[in-house]
Length: 451
Ligand SMILES: [Zn+2]
Image 1 (cartoon, protein in one colour):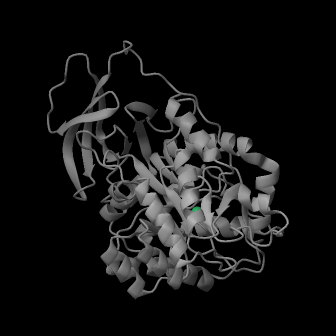
Image 2: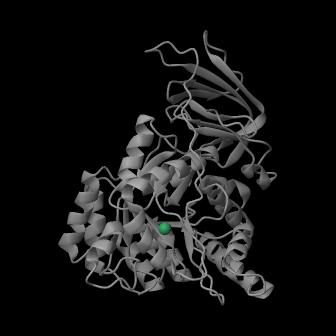
Image 3: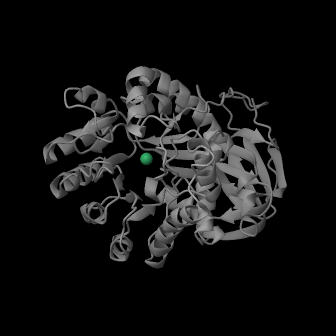
């Protein structure tokens, strides 16, 4: 989530609330070579494909996959039973727009670019990846079992972290990462002098021509990227990729089987990205109604990186000294602009995919901060079930993996349980009491991450 605030003091962002990653915990009693069998009894279960809550369902898990879902399933011999009869079980949440390797904190002096440059040249990719590992743990404990991580990760530091998570060295969500975002000149490091291109190149892959765009996609694919991030425009300097470049990037990504996430803020750039055939549009700050209708007709999903009221208030507290904070009318109109975008997108029939774009330290675990985006969508008027779909099945479809985002036979055993029914009382989304990823339990009980 990018907070765009124009207040007397400069808003920026920055660094790492580093929560300490907890170590992995082996499932007890599993003979080597045997897939453990788990039967979960769920009081309520969210059917993400239909957007409805079901009562009293059992979930049979074998190894890393869900084998069966139904009412009153028999307990197989040797199965471990997990009683979540007083909980609501949901598919593991997906944040489709993260920056695990970036955290900058509010300051009154530096611009955001300056902080990012300092991060690039002084923090360095290895340390960013290690700190990203701590944040990854925070996402998992907050209920996110998958993230789509969209760059600002140094030189493929995201690839290193994704590998460490996949092999179990680091606890974290499944990580669909992009590598450096494909960008027009300057990246988002506006103001870095042309004689220091390596600084920009640390976090962005600058595209110069359609062939270069294709080459950049192949570089990312070669490093194991699961998604291509492209900047149709850069917010600060309004630099844009050409239609040719965007089409080449999308075409090459398609040949590599990779979806494309397009950062696009101006209406023109959004339209160009949609016409090029990207999978999702991120931010879409200035999208017109007709552009939203075009997105709906082309099946391009929207990732609204909006701010909840609570996060905005926290940001203002951190950034603006008392007495210099904007008044309540400013606050209301800031929030209203974001909510209006989401409402217009919904009215146009655009699929909403949840993505936080959190890369700022709000003094809370980053996973919890990201979960706040769901409250922003709810505050914008999205029905609770649709918010849950945005963070599960819709996001899974944007990732192009039908083993994610739903509790169904064949899906990964990625699920969470919350205290209460979030369709009736949305606050329940903030009360995550159980987290399982790939059949392994990471959180079980109130404030009880398994170590
Ligand atoms: Zn972002």
